[in-house]
Length: 149
Image 1 (cartoon, rainbow, N blue to C red):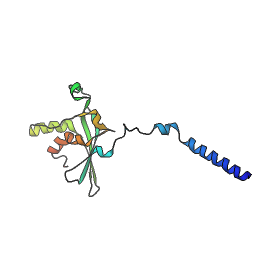
Image 2 (image 1 turned 180 degrees about the vertical axis):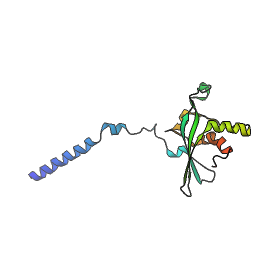
Image 3 (image 1 turned 90 degrees about the vertical axis):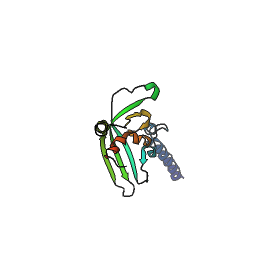
Image 4 (image 1 turned 60 degrees about the vertical axis):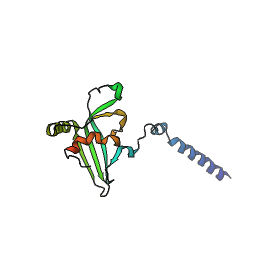
């Protein structure tokens, strides 16, 4: 009987030590629902569904947005990193673009520009622009055939 009691006591000690391994830091490091970003929201697809694109913001301008009261809190993006994944071959292409320079080049060569670099701050998640805003940022680069998407 004494062996059985020691086994029960050791089982109690083991369960207590397992409970102690979960610290408060691990519990507090979990992400809340508001902070969670679904990966699908950050990716855009081409018309045929053969490519995926993701845009990371590398640099923003310190310029103050005009009429903040009307359009909300926005930032002016100057440099981006575009990642394109070909779904058929799993090939990944990356390129860094200075949107400001591309905008100036298009204005000189074609006498127009279509880029709207002002992006709502809420549309940038974890440093990436949500998929619905991708065409705003790459329209001039695609007009100059820097990006074929």
